[in-house]
Length: 351
Image (cartoon, rainbow, N blue to C red; front, side, top):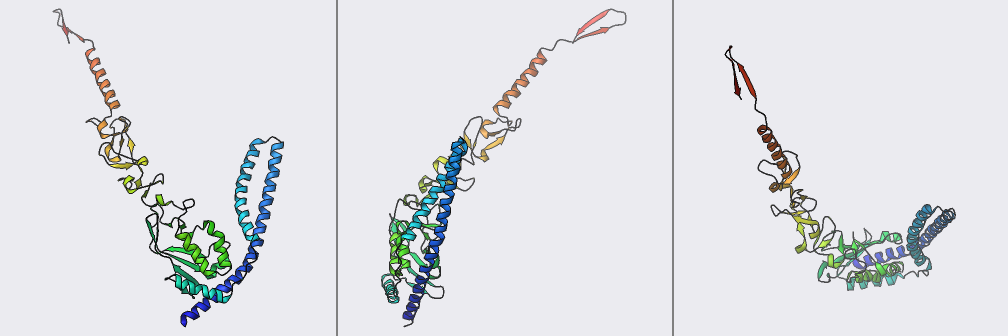
């Protein structure tokens, strides 16, 4: 009996939410109409400026205005479609209390994980175990927040929560190809899901979301299934399999083959950012296999410095200096020293 009372109270809460939503929808139409009028006015104003710039041959200004109009029209078209769906929708027929109650009974029969929390004003179900293209994604809790149904036209009043998460390797917030941060990408289900909430068809609401979760649409995933497992390259972001990823031992990050290399001296795997190309041999090396030239202080791999710590250029310059010094000593003229004896004549001594 207590469960039945809970279901009756929940049915009343859902009916009240549907009644309030009908009023909210009319207010939302009014707000959207104001936005539509503003967008039209902005387009008209930009078009006038574009016409003036073209007539006066201010072509640079005209091109900037054209770009701005193009961007605004793209946003305008998206908003217009949603506005059309909202205003063209026939008046919603409010559900009967008994219909909502029967939907709750049907949910209890269909889903083993039905949970009703009157205090928090939530109703949730747990899906069957989901596996798409041999990738296990686990079970999901679909939770409807009844007190947030009034915000239906601004944000979804429900969340899709992974209970055994196996998120995408490069984004832990994507727990399903169509779920990110517990928010479902509804795709073609956008209108049917909202119609189900408006009409109090609570069973259809959960079934629609469950059906989206059980299927994979390769045209609109947050992350494609073929990129689900593996590692994301820290540099370019591309997802590669574990066998094709490389770990940089310097920065402790994972990279793809195109963003990694290895030190030619110690064979350590490193990323491009942690590698250094020796200016002498032009080979990539890690920071542990380089040293400064004692003369010019240039950075070289250890194999390109001699025993005295000199690079080839500095070594060559030092040899040239030493050779010049030797040549100068060889070519230096003999010094003649004259010694005058006491009246006994002169003796010449060659030094």
